[in-house]
Amino acid sequence: MSNPQDSRVGVIRIEGTNCEDESAQAFSSLGCDVEKVHLKQLVGEVEPSNCRNLSDYDALYFPGGFSSGDYVRAGAIFASRMKSGLKSQIDEFISSGKPVLGICNGFQILVELGALPGSDSGTTKVPNAVLHTNDSNRFEARHVNLKVNSSNKSFFLDNYETNQVLAIPNAHAEGKLILDKDMLNEIENNNQVAFRYCNSEGLLDSGYPWNPNGAPNDIAGITNSRGNVLGMMPHPERVFHGWQHTDWTSSGKKPDGPGDGRALFEGVVEFLCK
View (cartoon, rainbow, N blue to C red):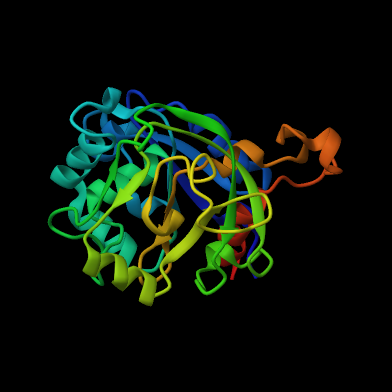
């Protein structure tokens, strides 16, 4: 097993991204070599000495925020700019099996990019899903409960217990995953669902506000069929430490211990170190 310091993680950002610092810190805390990379560095719109390639990294992370002000649709402009200049690199990165993680706006970007639900070759020509406006027609910001779908065998979930219930912060206005019935059946049959919204006891189909956006089947996060691309709406990077949980004083969670989001990042790092 190699050292985490040998693993390079690229946190990709543009104007409007606002979760890159805590996202980079999560991987840095586990020993990874992390770089916050602007899209202009990847498409060659900076001086040559500051240019980067996707192949420079062992894993990619698309953080949350409001890239390009969420104009057109959340994540659409970021994804369009990537497709226009980097599609072949993205497809090669995904098809090589390297990890790609998108949180909140990052999930929206991966869906708009066609990387989720995805295809065997990487991305699809046009998106086959969308993250739509919440049923409440408002921005939803609170801790939500997620149930790990242990039938999904992706390395992202390796460090969670079977069907573990998590408390993760949620903050989005467009988080309702919409896709046609055939595609929904396909991702369910392929066990591509990674997380589902649930109540505090782990029960599904609990409705609003447990499911904050009305997503079908309580879907909060999915992977591609290969399991190396994950997108989810809630923010695991915001509960990397126990003290970041709003109820740690009453729940008995140790403030100096791990938060519920840490295991997700650990799964990525352990995969990279193999």
